[in-house]
Image (tube, rainbow, N blue to C red; front, top):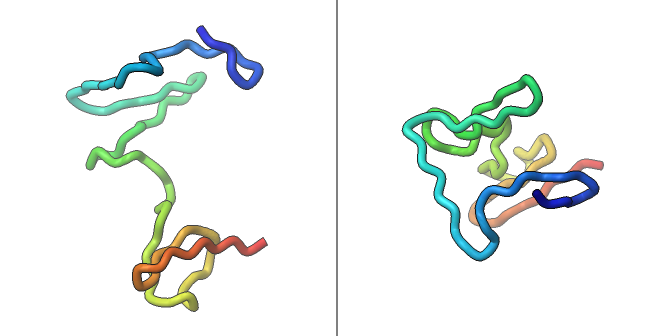
Length: 79
């Protein structure tokens, strides 16, 4: 057990070795009584938004995010 950020945490693995998790199917995380899938059905990290989006031009950006336009990366934050 290790204490970080004012809370106690159990440790899995070691900071001086690599870690391999093997499974034949889904990987879930349980928080309280709620369980979520860590990976989607294609093996990608399960997120509700695309982290990096592709757009045709800067004028096509309508919401906060990270965008790739013609090979250039844009960070848009409207606050």
